[in-house]
Length: 111
Image (cartoon, rainbow, N blue to C red; front, side, top):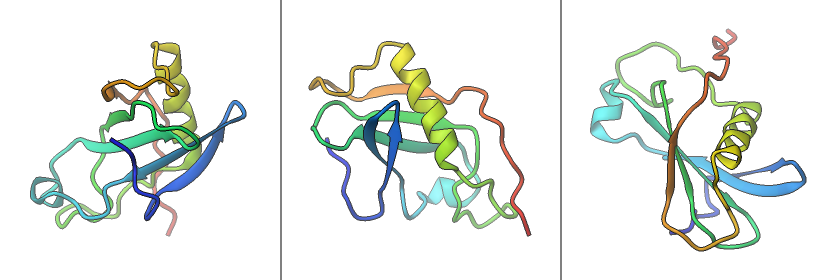
């Protein structure tokens, strides 16, 4: 499984370029405020296994809650480093590597 380029962003973590994205439209359950939000990360230059991360926050386009906490590139870098320390090998073909997010500081949205 590979991430689409449309809607994804690039990030460099420890001199390796990764592509990451969150689903653009929420599922019906996520729109009603159900969690988790899933983040997908893969190495940009090769098609290896995808990292799927369950985040304990609402989808940005949910219908119920207030303004969501933004998912910042620094959070994605922290999550990617955690997955690498847990044994993820992004360049090797494999099934998706699923994990939960570490305790990443959640900053409230700025008005």
